[in-house]
Length: 424
Image (cartoon, rainbow, N blue to C red):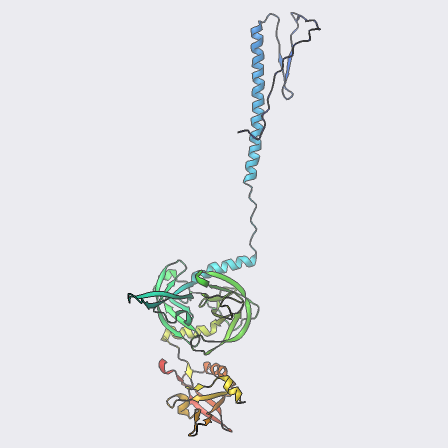
């Protein structure tokens, strides 16, 4: 192959003397000088008249040979120098752009908290229509996080609802069967437990949600659409929002609103502040299409913490109730009054024992309205959400003063709060 580089060559040209000029016979004592030029290098060859023609020819050939060697040496030198220059240029690497401070902080946060996030698979038992064999089929998946070194995993209740078996996959891709410790349908929180080595369990650092501010940066880690350990970022868009529980419809108060992308599969995953501390559980999105639309909701950690402690200790949440069924808020608004209309107060419930009246019909089929609750312990009750919010601040066995509108009269009735019948 032809080289990109040209080698220097030396060519000898012999020219016969002009015939018009007489030949001169060299003097016996005068040397014959022949000059060959190669890059300004002169070679002097001396010859005496008494040397034979053969000796002279050999010396000329040797001189030409040395000139050729010199040319080749210079050509090779230039080739090597140029080749070294190209090699040096080929290994010159442009230094990569350094990450900014906020990028480094985000990378560090993800690396430190990813081992705390788990992938949860919901398995349901299905019977084959032809063989009648019972098979376990994945019916959903979600996220969760490690709560403590004892193997407790926290997630949303709707992630595990209807499961016959549950499997938890840790960050190292090891999978464990999970048992349900307890759940709170009203707040959409559930606690699982796995038997995994303690060195694989990294509890997530728990923060505080009471001092959050709109605009502060947040991070969501989860498994959207089965893509494990996905990080999305955003800010807190709003505070003290209210959503309804997917299981019971009971309102969940003080919910965090964020624009961090939350998609199906993110449910149960952690929402973190810029320090990497847990501030909420990603639980719902507002979207007509079912995908992220920039409006996501997280249950605040201050609410979650108390629920998890009760579930771990007792396996259930003892939440106080009045023991009533009440009408939809729209029905009460149509009556032109503000409050909660009691539809049914079973006689064996707290409200029935205290004497609250239910809505009923007389012998002619006319509707007789029951009591309308307007306040509890002096706190105004305008709708069902207000009633739930007040009861969440009370304890089982506590006596509360319920103010009701009975016909045209306002009455105050003491009621002793009790737990749900299935939680005693």
